Length: 138
Image (cartoon, rainbow, N blue to C red; front, side):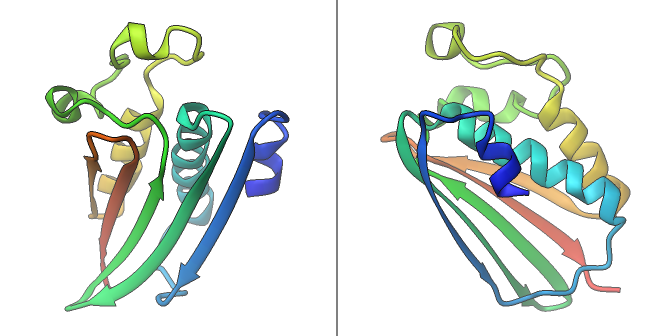
């Protein structure tokens, strides 16, 4: 999956770090593949030329967690609450050359909700974003 997405960004040097403590998730594989594609593709879009994407998972108190973290340009704090809205695209001055419809994160949110889960985003002022997905253990 990651190698296929990297083909769209031939000039970028991205390091992937994958650490899966929790390896079994009760999900619809095809739908959840869309979640991963959207989140990883977004990370690749917003990382300059070199960077990293970290994917990790763990289990805690009947909840499975999947975290996707990158060192891209980040999301301004005042926009974080809107990123899962349909057609919302961040500050155009920060991403004017980046293509997209503004539907990806809305789709991600709906797929996660279909699995009775939640997703939230955190971003650092210096750059970088984390998406934290929580799914109930069945």
